[in-house]
Length: 594
Figure 1 (cartoon, rainbow, N blue to C red):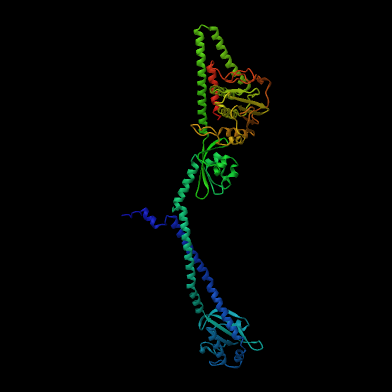
Figure 2 (spheres, one colour; figure 1 turned 90 degrees about the horizontal axis):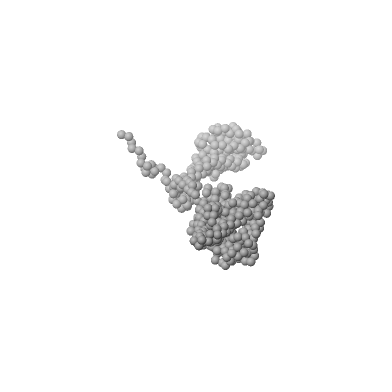
């Protein structure tokens, strides 16, 4: 029968622990133990040589001290080698005092005059003393009659300095080894202490790692990191993380796309990579709140910021551009419905009038009434198209005029309006005009003699737009604040938040190198001026494109003449199909406004 495979749990118990705490602790202890063993070996390796060298120098010093005694030199010359001779007595005294293994005095013929073993006195030495007899000091470890020893040999000289023999001193090598072995326990104690300190430090470090990693295994951390990368770079929300000093430390792909940044922004201060503006203030926490609207380039973003425990913050960004566009389309649809309702109401009134005239058999009056209505509408459409050749802008103003008439507001086109069909970005200009006209209509709503005046003219290749109203105006201290993302005095619509239109107007103007400013209009109210350089493909008007001069501003809802006899800018209902087409075009134009 084959052996059953080892269960996974069993294999796990026999292998390395999975917890990061245990793995780090074992790793640190192993490192500390390895370092302690290595340090001990590195210390012991030169220690033996150091002890040998120390013993040889000590032996040499004893030999030099012995050779320096003149009495021993005289006794060597005047006596014979004997057990109780003066040389043997002096050498033994020195040996015992110095605790040397032996002190041997010899003549030039290598014959001993002293030795620890008295039986060796008078015999030739067992090792070669030639170097010492030649006048050299010798240190060596060698074996002799008493075994292995550390030796020092020096020449012995008489009073005249002539070499008459040599002195050899030996220190037992076993004593050197004993000193080495004796030093090992103390060394191991130091190594053990170092290992204990290292193990304790490893334990503290492992506990910190355990807290930082939440007691996860390294494989779990690796999996979480992979999941984090996949999530951050796969979601459709931008994520940007900041440290406590405001530097960017994380930026996912969507955040890079929404903010127009790249990976090089990581590690740099947020203010440097984004520049001043509301987006920077929101992400840096200088503007607080939830679901804050901001505009970055041509994108409408919703930002939320959450502080982290380390003093930094994580912010999320959602692209609301498409939603805002859908909202504007919904608003435009409502505007079209309002315009059609107004036209339907006016059409019903006029149809009732025609029906009454026919029932009264006043046929001539009926024909005259229908002609006047058709003529009024033709004059209205011709007046806009004669001044504004771009079809999107013309359709937008016709649609706005219908809504204005429904609200009881007179929408006027100024005498100076002259704009050819040579726009570089007609949709951008539609956005600007639509936002400003909408704001003006809202500002004058409910006021007596409400009037909004629009002026569009070309100065070379520059387009200049002015929108004036008779509303309450804008206080001087708020004329810059109104261009801030998210700032509005209006109630938010059902599909989102307000405070984006004027910000988009200024950004569109600045993108083309122009400007958008607010001021007080003559006679009260607000006046917005937008300058768009290089907005036209060609400067001026061609000879075949001269615009018919206007005869004056259009009358208000009460029929007041104002500055001239021009008809009121309100489409009539008689040519319903033509007007519906114009209103539809206005709806398309309004999708880029507000």
